[in-house]
Image (cartoon, rainbow, N blue to C red; front, side, top):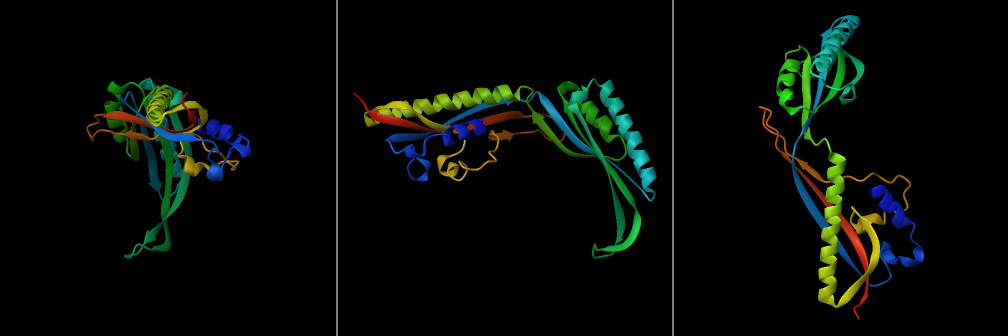
Length: 241
């Protein structure tokens, strides 16, 4: 969304822009805000499978065998293949360290790692799945994120609410000032003072929604998610008749 907005803004005739990228006509600048709280209905597990052995081939064989076991387990728990990412295998040498933590150069063996990312959409099943994965020797959990299965729909909903909030503020401000709103000059999730530096870049970034994700304690109680969105709008105005 940000990409499209910035491209539209950059396409305006430069004659319509005053210093700093602002309009050369009377305008008001408002920031719309909205917030939605939703119960998490999905969780993403990120973990690594690690094996260590003086022989690199044996460490690799151990990782591959346990990876097959993990994939079979996920299949038994009816996790869709599209919800499972099994990253490439990485092998690194491990060296002996002295008392100061510096490597001595003596090779001890090899560490072979394979990363996994798994989306669990059936929440009642995920605590048992976590326990089963932890029970596999060499599995190290890195992260556990609560999420929403319909995140795009929620982002669209919160964007629309932020736009409505901005318009309400603009109407209230215009009425108090004795002016009327003529049109929208520009809309962006980025504050306009920051846009000047981005307008003429070729690598426009994608929109990001400011989010606060609250996850539960170790007993796997998922908290709610608060999705928030800010939108910055420049409205052109003229005297009310």
